Image (cartoon, rainbow, N blue to C red):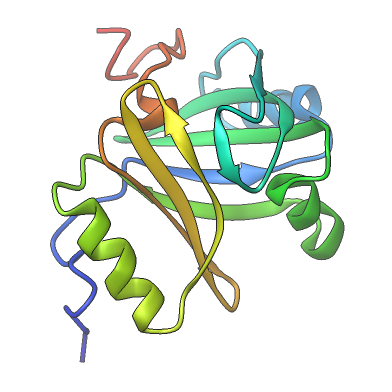
Amino acid sequence: MWSTATGLAGRSPQHIGFVVADLDAALADLSSAGGIPVSSPLTLDLGEGDLDLGGPARLRLGFAMLGGLMAEFIAPQEGPNVWSRALRERGPGLHHVAFTEIENYGELVHSLIGSGFEMSAAGQFAEDHWCYLERGPLVIELTSGVGPAGRYDPGISGSPDAQ
């Protein structure tokens, strides 16, 4: 039986995030696997003012559209942070599942923490608050607005921003 206690029931993820050591290789592999269109890489610097927990960080990001779902590829470049820790401890692969535009963001964060999730990163991007909540191998990203990935035009055919 499916639990609906988290407040995410019926919501589709906005994106799934993967942590990788070599962004260029990951995007090339994906592109060559059936011609999946990928974005050009970009660099994101998250300083002390951007992260309340989990950073600072310099990241290289790339995106791909997998049907109607965005895939975000994160290659940590600098700083001891949540992404470099995941890469070091678990290796490359799935990092998080992201849900955006959460109207009851604070309430849902507190509910998930109360059910055993731990906050591993949190910050603000533009006016949006976001965090990673972890329990075991599961990492959920919650964002009060569209979030960082939703603000980039990945420049790939089929992306919501490229249309």
